[in-house]
Length: 87
Image (cartoon, rainbow, N blue to C red):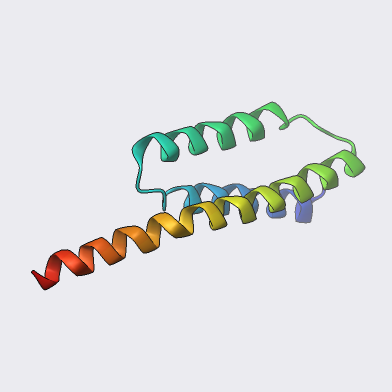
């Protein structure tokens, strides 16, 4: 794997883990972290550049899904916290 591909993959891995931390529900958060780690560990020995690029593209799509899924939890958490502080 080229150095830029490796750096790109590591950046994606870190970004996915970082975004998964935004789930407020413990079960969603741990499931997402486990799936991310398992997927990256499963594909760590892939050498074919075309396959690597396909996996990177899939990871980018999955990162977008994680961001969209975690956003309602962030909004819900912050709004209930705000309402609680008003009382």
